[in-house]
Image 1: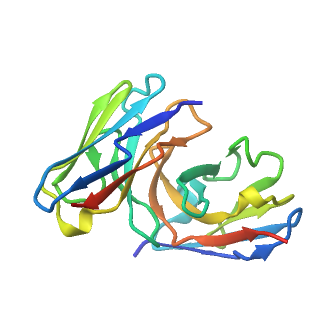
Image 2: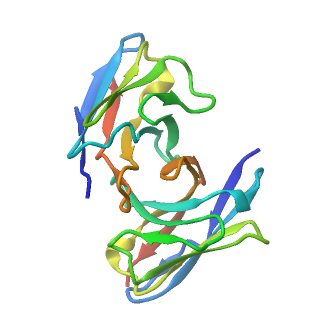
Amino acid sequence: EIVLTQSPATLSLSPGERATLSCRASQSINTFLAWYQQKPGQAPRLLIYDASNRAAGIPARFSGSGSGTDFTLTISSLEPEDFALYYCQQRSNWPPITFGQGTRLDIK
Amino acid sequence: EVKLVESGGDLVQPGGSLRLSCAVSGFTFRSYTFHWVRQAPGKGLEYVSTISTNGGATYYADSVKGRFTISRDNSKNTLYLQMGSLRAEDTAVYYCARDLNWGFFYSWGQGALVTVSS
């Protein structure tokens, strides 16, 4: 099973700042990685797939990068609605599909 | 509008059974692979199961293999998850999700809460 480790667990930033979230895989997953955003009481929402492709309707301030074992989700300038939980997820060599444990993005 | 609506969540005793449904509209149901993903209270996301477009291929997490069965009815645009031998650790919100690129979750339902408790 491929383990995804997200860091940091919590990130406290202010609106307008740049956010950088990391996801590290226990073995190479090529670019078979996605990022999701989840707000309290809501289902997750797909942001990025195949490491760097924005899903439909996702603002351009969200970008993804990386390949192999190290991946990054960047939010270029935080909007108030961006403060949420973020998960990475891999689809290489499944089942099982696996998720990271999440990064909580808090308002500073 | 793409819509996935889960139903069937309930309180069930350990060892009991439950069937979840996911009604889909707004796109061609039979053309897509679907998944179930769950989230225990206050916890992260956990993959549960996958079914291919015609139902010929199914996959399960080890934690539910042999107890849960995924199925679909393409004539009713509905996905199912039959859950048996339920345990306390199966307590979670269960989401159905449409596939993207064979293994990503493109769109999600709002979730159905399953509580396993005596």
